[in-house]
Image (tube, rainbow, N blue to C red; front, top):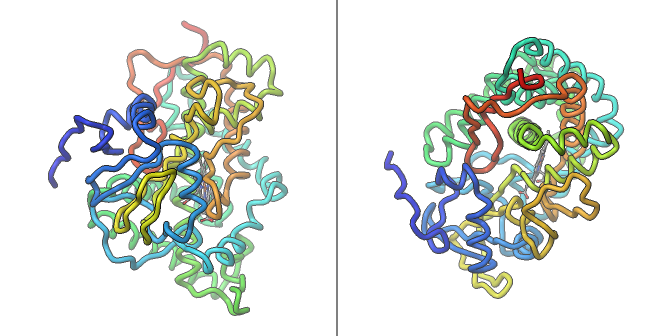
Length: 399
Ligand code: HEM
């Protein structure tokens, strides 16, 4: 595979997989935003990127010109053979597919799940609390969403490494490597088909059975393919995202002792702190395919291009947020777009918020003192979901 040519002009030739973007995208977005509300690159067969909150919102709400049939910017555009409703659906198919997924993720359902998530966090902390340091991404933040979603779906929590491997192959390696992408999707489909088949003879009371028992808008049970697509979506959408959000929050607290001490002294600030971490370090950037020519905030948009729909860049727009580049854990007004805007807004936001809150609360209770390990390196995942994948921390007051 050819290595991409390094970027020399971000404004006309941006590349969201460039290591400089992955490492610290914020100054690059400032440059792009100052140039135009929508920029374009010829890379990845042609991609626009809205840089302001207003332009991101306009595209997210416009399902006539922008389709979700492709939601990841990749080097190639293979034929669409696998769907993952509702995230890959457009109206009118989108609404019924989404409504099926909402009931298991209500705030009440999350309250019931919360004790299990608290127990998971403590089991993980028990494993390293007596060590001087830990890679918190590998040993803490990663496992919380894996185990929570496995618990909800009724699949073995021990299969977590397999899920993480598929997600890495689909969301990162798959940007440039179509074979790896297709193999990962097939492996995942095979895995879930096994679980679907098993429940046909022996029904369970988990989310897989709930989906299998659900009825579509025509009153008929969902096809196996529909159930399969939704299961693949829940696994991909539910793990990397929250892993990243918890990791970025811990990273911030590790390097900002004043915020860490304040959050411990004033735990009532947790809800605004969580929203601010979601805004400032939003992990999820989606994509759309342009299906009809149009104009967005005065910029012409041509079809056959993709759009890099950066909710994270929208969240750093100074026209929408005062001190957009500062992290203010008591920020009052915070209408961030971390969970998306428009019809595709996140189904799992209640779960994500609960996991983030519990993960930080339990960590701060047991490990009030921690900091970045100067001998280690923090690394970030690239592309669709950005978050710390290596987060070396020293535990306890400076020893
Ligand atoms: C901090 C964690 C999370 C973030 C930042 C996040 C972000 C997002 C974003 C930005 C979208 C919109 C996609 C689009 O416009 O194309 C989305 C959709 C979605 N998310 Fe999340 N998500 C998170 C966690 C979760 C979890 C835990 C689940 C469930 C297990 C989940 C399930 C979904 C689903 C099913 C959709 C598709 C909704 C639709 O198409 O109508 N997400 N998420």
